[in-house]
Structure formats: C-alpha cells, structure tokens
Image (cartoon, rainbow, N blue to C red):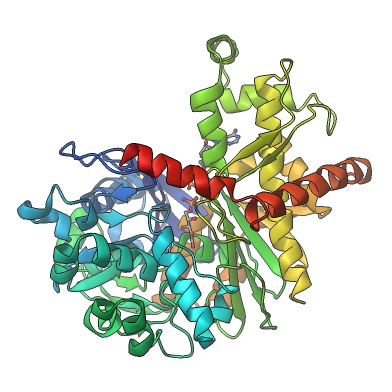
Length: 551
Ligand SMILES: Nc1ncnc2c1ncn2[C@@H]1O[C@H](COP(=O)(O)OP(=O)(O)O)[C@@H](O)[C@H]1O
Ligand SMILES: O=C(CO)[C@@H](O)[C@@H](O)COP(=O)(O)O
C-alpha cells in the first residue's frame, strides 16, 4: 500500500489495452491489468459477417472504451492505490489507427445504417489496402517537388492518414461525405476521457504530414482528386496539443468508467513507440529505441536533421522537445513469427511443446538456439506484412530461399528471426548513410523476452543492446507524460531521469557470429534489392493476379 501520488498510463496495443499505475516519484510500477479487445482485429469480416477484401485490418472503437472500463479499475485495485492518489491519466495508441466520426466524435460504425460498411470502421495501422492511393500520393508529391516529402524519406506509407482517407473517398464516397472528423484513435480516446478533441503533435507530424505548421496544400490535394481538395480544412484540421500537455480534465462519465476522480489531468494523446523512448530513459541524441512486438518501430532523437531514405518521418520535437524525432519501422516482426506458428507448425511439435510446458515460440526458439550461424542454409525476407522502411511498399511479400527436403520448422523459424534482424540493420544503415548517427540501440517490447532473438540482433547489428527495464514500456511512457501534464515534472526529460528504466549493454555482439552474419546479410541485401527495387516485380504481379482471382 502506498499513499504517494500516482499516475495511470494506458497503452492501446494491436490486440489489447494495458493499464499501469505508476508512482510519480520514482516510476515504480504498482499495478497492471490487460483487457483484450472483444473484436480483436477484423481482417476477414465485420461483426455482422460482411466479408472484407485482402489486406484490410479494422477495429471497433467501443473495444477501446472497454479497456477504460475494465483494465483501469483492475490495475488500481491490484496496485492498492486509492483514486485520490491519482493525479493524471495518459494514453498511447498504435498509429496510424484512424476513424471517421461525426463532429461530436461519434464513430460512423456506431450508426445503425453503417454497421455493414467496412469504411465506417477504425482502420488499424496495419490496414494495407491503400497502397494504390499511397503510390499516387508519392508520385504526385515527387512530380510537384512538395517540400514535405523529404521529411518522410521520399515516400509516405499506405498506413498513414492521407492514404487511408483517399481510399475512403474513392471507395465509399457516401461515408466520406458523412465523415465530419478524420480522427486518430490516439486522439479519439483522449476526446472520450476529457470531452475535448485535441490533435496530438506526434501523430499529426508522423502520420498526417503536418510539417512547419502546415499540411499538404489544397492545391496538391485537388490535383490528387478534386473531391479531396477540402480534406484538411473540412475533416482533419484541429488545434494541435504538445506532447505532455494537458488536453483537459477527466469528465464525470469517464471517471465512472475508470474509477478515477472527475477533474484529474488528462494528457494529450501520443503514440506507443514514441512514448517508449523516455520510458527507456533514451533522451539523448543517437539513442535509438526499437520497440519490438507485433511490429517494430525504431524511434530516435537527434540534433541533426537528415534525409534518411525510407524513414517514416522526421518531426521537430516529435519525441522530445528541442530535438528532431525520427521514426522508422518494420510492419511485421512478431506477427511473422506468429504466422509461421499458425500455419507451419507440425502437430508433433505443438504436442512436444505442450508436454514441456513451453509455448510454441519458446520451443522453436530453444531448438533454433542450438544451431550455428548459417547452419540452416536459409535466408528470408521479412516482408509478410509489407515493408515500411526503407522501401515503403506494402505490396511486397515474404521470401524464403534455400529450402530442401531436410529443412525443419526450427530452421525456418530461425531464418525468420534473422530476417527481421537484417531488416533492422538495413534501417540503421540508412540512418548512418544520411549522417544521422545511431550511437546506441535499446530494445523494448514483448520480444525482449526472447534471448536468442536479442543475441541475433546484437550480432547482426554489431552493437551492444540495452534493454528497457519494464515489461510495460508504452504504458510507463504514457504515465510519465501524464506526470508532466499534471505538473509533477517540468518536462519529459526530467520525468525520464526519475521514472525511466533501462539496463545498458545486456547483449553483446560476438565477433565470430557477427562475421558469419555479414555473409548472410550480404545475401539478404541482394534479395532485398532484387525483389524490392524493381529488378523483379513478381510480388506486385502476384498481388494483381490474386486481386483478379478474388474479385
Ligand atoms: N517467445 C517469443 N518469441 C518470439 N515472438 C514471440 C514470443 N512470444 C510472443 N511472440 C510474438 O510477439 C508478438 C506480441 O508482442 P507484444 O509486444 O506482446 O505485442 P504488441 O506489439 O501488440 O504490443 C506476437 O506477434 C507474438 O507472435
Ligand atoms: O506504427 C506504429 C507507431 O508509429 C505502431 O503503433 C504500430 O507499428 C503498432 O505497434 P505494435 O506492434 O502493436 O506495438
């Protein structure tokens, strides 16, 4: 039992939300609770059975409110913390996860007439069906030499706000017309908590192409599609809230959901990856944090503004005030390992894992750990969920080269682990090539529990890996921002010094293994450029064939 002031951080992930109660003075984590989303990810059909095309990924906004109703009170209860002790609540969300609403924030999918309309739902970050729109956005921006394009490594992703909105306009104009606000879920949840719609500076910058106080121009949008000309003014623009600022006060309704006191500080929304940097005490230039879970986000602040090819974006103060905040990422990481277990694990392996009391991941990892580098004779491309950085193309797909009749499941599993490490090395190389130094690599997220994976990353990147000293990095980061918003710290750096947690240099590279990986990485690079840079466009052709076959 503690009587000290506390804050609550709520992390809205891909499949669940997690609430964490944190002591303000030292970041001690007093209680945590998780609540899975009832509808998880809609990628096959809507709740009423309406089928979805390939590459769609939707969510149901009421599932987010259930997290507030269940996880927050449960975390408070587990922490033994009384509501009077809690001075603020902060949230972080996946992004770009975005929904169409009425002017009062009502999601269009909550209107009875739209329950069977896919475009009325939340488009999750990994909704990858707007690649055509992203391609046109990029081509036109390049042709017109739009200044903002360079801030996004030369290409914006189909995952971002404009691509998803243009897809909505072109595929369901009626829903587009009824959309009064196009809202990041990160801001929608804050809106539900405090009754005020404030657009957070992080998603506006990284996912909404808001740079130097402006969005892409009306002129440019009209050239994309005349009906898109008013998108920014009519549906997107909203006062921007700085990270760690107060968005408003907890409403009576939200107090009843959460068990917190009405009137406490509600922090401006933020993104899961970006809040994790201060949670891992990474507040100096060049400290890159890779948040490894379903996907990986690489976030780093720097005093230099560089043109990093294929990055997600560079935003002034996008992570920490006063520094350029960079984001890059891999759309599929844990998701790829999960896919293999779902589709490629023989029954006898599943039985053996169960008999040993291990998860399939743990069992395959143990088997894979017995191998020498290169022993499986395989190399893979980690593009099963497309490529976010550095190619920015979600129509790319996975590859496995070197299979024989002796290839075993653990060989493939290891090759997939390695492929994601090669993807991260490709990203780090792009930063260094743009003279934006990566001084240190710190890993956060659910995959830190896989020691083999961590060692592969240390060997492949030839860097000592630090590891965040919290199992709840995003929720901790959200709570720290709430502490700043409530006035407990002057800024997020001060909060990071007191509340952030990291173990430095936990996994060290082994020179021999690193040298062996250099050879495999060279093969990865060859395949990467062959399939990803246009030498062989087979992946795009296969998508077209699939689209025709399923039309
Ligand atoms: N031991 C493991 N080794 C490798 N991957 C794992 C392991 N356990 C779970 N995963 C994968 O980790 C991912 C979940 O990561 P987590 O950080 O918990 O979620 P999120 O990214 O949604 O916050 C899933 O894709 C799952 O397949
Ligand atoms: O893209 C971002 C942040 O910009 C993430 O929200 C997205 O990759 C989802 O992250 P998770 O894998 O669910 O942790």
